[in-house]
Every structure is written in structure tokens, then in C-alpha cells.
Image (cartoon, rainbow, N blue to C red; front, side, top):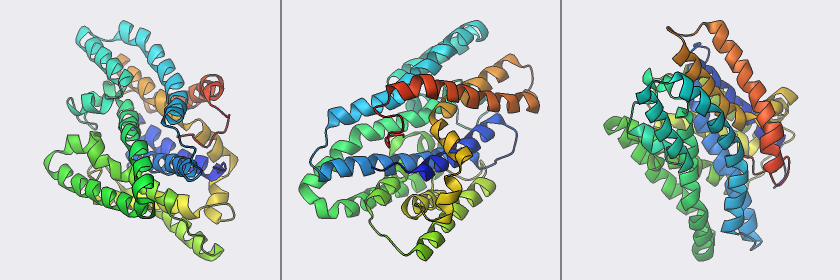
Length: 341
């Protein structure tokens, strides 16, 4: 798969709102949907790579999981290790016990299940959990335990109908999320069954082959950018996620991935160096920001000053660059591997 700088730019559009939302500064009310954008990107890139290997009859589950481990584990282990001494020094016994449970959940990619059984994502107590954000990594890894073998089987048995099967699976998952936010909102937010449709829409986008005219591609990718930007600006914690309302940013992201290729206005915007740079370090930035914010709140009697939270936003980017440069990149098969999800 050819490297697409605009995809890294799209990652920047996802991670910056997440960081700003968790900072509590009120600058990005819908910033939490950056995680949903990441899910679509992840599904798109992973499926692009797997389908290409399946077409060439070169797909290997062992190789796939090795690449995932190289991508996910080095920076994740580093951040967890750095958190341990601060947790030991600053957390009360009960909080330290909870932190130990979250470490164990991270190690088994079950954080989403742990946090589902505890406080909700938007609760005040959740802001004090240094590893709360790892729930999304758990959702992805649980998906990638099931999805590659299922896609391989679909290619073997019903190659012509793979997209139809993925669409049906996405519809079932979306329907489950519509039921879930009304009846079990915490489970709906944290667990894979109601989140799978977001990854599957990315997967479907990877398998749709349509090369429209430049004019149409510009229009559709711009529409996608408007849907994403509008959702980030107007969504709030009152919007149930995931739900049918999530189709706005999710479909918008898919439109950018499908049609915002080289030569379009959207690709030119997202390929600007600042966007690409933040996109390259986005995984590490995502890992670092929540521990920084959580420990700052733990050490403060009241909500930390806005200036401190802004400084921590900047610090998360600095730490992200350091861990990307010296931890992530050396472990990747290629410095700019397309498997950057």
C-alpha cells in the first residue's frame, strides 16, 4: 500500500480534538469523537493491507499480529512504565489498587471491559484514571483478533460478496448501538459489538474501488471534511455515541479516505507539514495525554489552571515526538509503514 500523507493529516484532525477535549478547556466540545475517526482510519488501513495480501495469496496471520505488536506495544509499554512511579507516589491505596487493575487490563487488552464496569467515560472520577484512554486500544485489538480470520474466510468462500457481508455486519452493529445507548449506555460506549460498525465502515471504504472525476472527488472529500469538522464543533457529551448520529463524522471520515487523494483540495490541506507531523506522532500523543492530565488533576486540590493544561497539551506532543522517534520508529518494519494504525 502506497504511503498517503493525507491520512496522517487526518490522524491529526482526530488526535488534537481528543487531547483538547480531555484537557477540560472547553475548546473542542465534540473532541471525543476523534476516537471514532481513529477507528475508521484503522479499519481502512488494516483492510487495505490485508485485502492486498489476500489478493496476492500472501496473507499470514502470524505476520499480521507481529506487525500489530511492533506498532502497538513498544510505546504503550513505555507509557505504562513511566506511570508506575507516579502512581506509587501520588495515589491513595484504593486508587493504587484500581491503577494496578487497569495495568493488568492493558496487558490483556481488556481495558474497555474494566472501565465499562466502573464509572462512565464522562464522569468526574474517570478524569483521574491515568489509563482510561486505553479502552479504545482494547476495542481495536479485540476487533483484530476476530476480523482478519473472518475476512480471510470470506475471501475463501464468498470473494464476490465480501463487501455485502461487511455492510450487513456494520448494519447489525449500528442497530445494536442504537438499542444500546438507550438501554445500556456504558456498555454501548465501551464494548466492541456496538463499536464494530465504525471499524467496518473503514473496512468497506478500503474495498470500494471507484475513481471518479477530479471534480466529484473534490466535492465528496470536501463534504467529508465538513461532516467531520461540523461534528467536532457541534457534538457534545449529550450526543449518544456510538449511535446513528455518529454516521455524520464516520461517513465523513470514510469520504475523505475514499476521495481525498492526491490532487484534491482536501489532500492538499491534510498533507501540509504541520498536519502530517502531528499525524505521525498521533499514537504516542494519544498515549501520553491522559496520564499527564490525570496526574495533574490528582495533584491539584481543584481543577488545574488552564495555563497548566495548555502546557501539558504541548508536553504531550513533545513526549509523543520523543517516543515516536526513539521507541515507535525503531520497532516498525519501515519508518513510514502504511500499517501506521
